[in-house]
Length: 293
Ligand SMILES: [Zn+2]
Image (cartoon, rainbow, N blue to C red; front, side):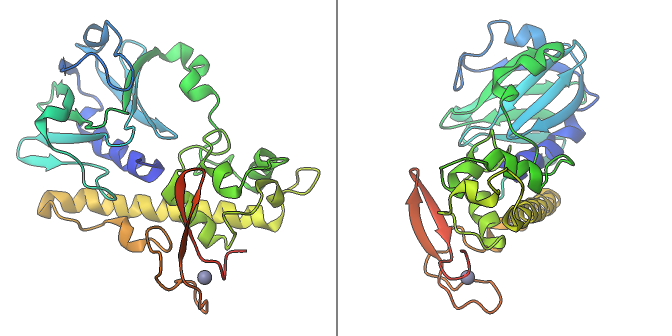
């Protein structure tokens, strides 16, 4: 499932072709994705200008001149292809190969500047919803979401408070969008390794009994920010390189320290550990049993 860095990379890929342009024509090849599309989907989009493309957690938010916001989620397998003249680009394609099969092209945006933006989603766990900007605070998909991990308000004190009293594992807590927005299986594993904390550790353990942050919480915040920033940077380079090569350059998976590296040596300097895999809440967790305590 695309996580924050991929979604942010998609945002950066869509912004130059969508911002300031009008949705001249919208095609919806089916009436539903994960959920049914709004009945007035085309009517509320066509003729409106996109005033900005934002992101909240794993959601993309296209602000429209009408005062509506188009809320988009990539689900498990969703991607956008961007065509503008001779330029072809699939922003965010840097962990998993993305489908280009036309049978899975569900939504097509024809922009007034000539760009064509196609949403493809073979498994159809993605979603699109239109919400009035004025009502966005009440939107259930967003209202319970925790802080943006790259935002200024996210710090050790905030993370410790969110984990205070939590009996679940750190892995499960960090994957919970209410604790922190945008992380999933890959980046939780990577952040925990950087913080040298075991994914099995009880979440409440990063806070004191009164909810104050222990040093672990600080390490974890640093680990989360570092890995997300590096992955977004790699995504940015993949955006540029796709135009030239359409190749695999910039794939951040080459920089994974634990994810999908079972049996390989731990990359922590001085650590002689071997990366292991285990299953937690139905998902694979990769970790080093030696330096992650
Ligand atoms: Zn290690």
